[in-house]
Every structure is written in structure tokens, then in C-alpha cells.
Length: 365
Image (tube, rainbow, N blue to C red):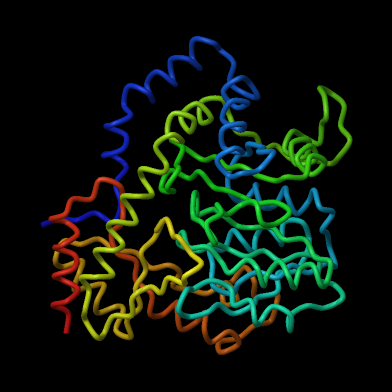
């Protein structure tokens, strides 16, 4: 049996007419930037996130970068980020000229450990950027408490967690702002690059919108040194067609994840831990194994596609060589990077495919 790591076809087949209608609607209107489709999607997604404002941008990285820029974070400032995440989190900090300060995760959840944040705060710290990694919510209450104590911004990186909940509340509305990616592989994915910044702060939303539109509040009037990062009408229309189905997609991912959690019983495999406060949406189902590379080859040889998130931790990436870190500086992130393996997880995965993955993992010795 062949089991892909991910495929978009099951949902796209279900929504084929809706997606084609969305294309025709935009094409017939001949209006491709900042139009009615963008406006409608922004309103719907803000409501989904229990937030007042949503600003569509070009991609997930820009959703974070523009939020930080709108907050006035700049060169000489520091932003706390988890040591275990995708590089875009740190790049958003770098793009505003600030320095990312890495804080280790809880190895059970892969998310930033709130108990380690306070020790990383200096007089240069301006914000904390928790990442709801793999679709599981961070422990937000203690993060918000330490942010309040030190008067810090909180920008939630929700790129992998559309619809995830913390203590029954959808993530994205706990901090001052939140960034979302709609990269095609995400639980809510466009048919190209797209992103959005969500916030309850009207002034912040206005500034993010202006910054993403060449720093312009109206045509040919530029109040900031801005960027070009806008959600185009076509992607907005596709996302609007998919958004009503997001909860259904997340429910199915939870069912698949539960089958993995119940069925995988190989003592060599460390399964994800789900705290009581979290209701994950399982963008990624990542296991840990001390013989990760052997497990990867075993599964690949059996026709099961896998991925590694992320094989080189951020502090050891060449692009951050200037920060002067060395191997051993962030041992938990390094441990995750050398043991994590992501197994197939997607909407439309059959019971037979799920069971085949479970059986093969249990056979690994």
C-alpha cells in the first residue's frame, strides 16, 4: 500500500464546483486586489477566530512581520520565540531588525515552555511570540501573565493551528495579534501563498493594512515605509469557499490522531502528549524515536511517506550564525530535531491507510 504524507485531493474533489465558481466570479469581475472577496473573507475569518479584525496579507511570514512592525518593534529590541519551530517565526523578528531570543520547549508538547520565558526577559525584550506548533495550543494563561507583568506584546504564531482551542477558546485572540498562514498544506489552505493578521486592536489592524500596502492609508498617500503584501482576490475567494468546511476537516484530523494514539503501541515510539487545556487540530502528527532515520527508511520502504520537522534547529541554521550559538546551547530543541518524524495526516485518509501506518510502526523493531 502507498500512503502519501499529505494530499489535497479529497477536499478539493468535494469542493470542486465551489472552487471553480470562485475562480469564475473573480475572473468575470476583473478585480484582483483589495476587492469584495478579500473583504468578505476577512470578515468571516475574524468571526471564526473570535476577533474583531482580520487583515489579509501575502503569506504567513508577512502576517507576523507586519504585526511586529506595526507594534514599533525595531533594531535593538528583542523578541522571545521558541527554539523549536519553523524558521519563519524567527525571520519575522529579524525582518524588523530585532533579535530573536530562543526559549526551549516542553519536550512533551514541542511548544514553548512558559516556565522558562521569564528568565529570558531583558530590558530589550518587547514581545513574546508563542507558536501553536503542529496544531496544538500553547499554554497561554502563564504566557499572558508574564507578558502583563513585564508590559510585553504577545504575537501568536497560528500558522499551523487554524481552529485549535485553548481551554475551549479558539487560539488567535489571546495576544495582541496573531499571524496565520494559508499555505496550501495548512488545515485551511489557499491554492497558492496567502496569510492574515488577526487582532482586536483597531489601530493595529489599520497599521498592518497600511504597512502591507506600501505604507499607504489611501492611494498615493504614504504614511509609513511599507511593504507590498496583500491577500489577492482569487486566494480570498478560494479561502472563503473552504472556510465553512474547516471544522469538518479538523474533526476528521482529530479522529485520525486518536486512532494513532490508541493504536500505536511500539515502546520505541514516543507519541504526542495532549494537555487537558488543549484541543489540537493536528496539522502535523509528529512522533519521536531515538532511531528516527531507521524508522523513516522502514516506513518509506513500506510505501509510507514521512517528513521531518525540523531536522536543523534554528540556532544552528547558517542564517543565524551571526548570533554565535553552538551545538548544545538548546539541547531540547536539538533532541527534538534529531528524533522527530511526522507521519501521514490529511483529510480524506481512509481507515485502511491509517491502520496500515499503525501496523507498520508497530512492526518496527
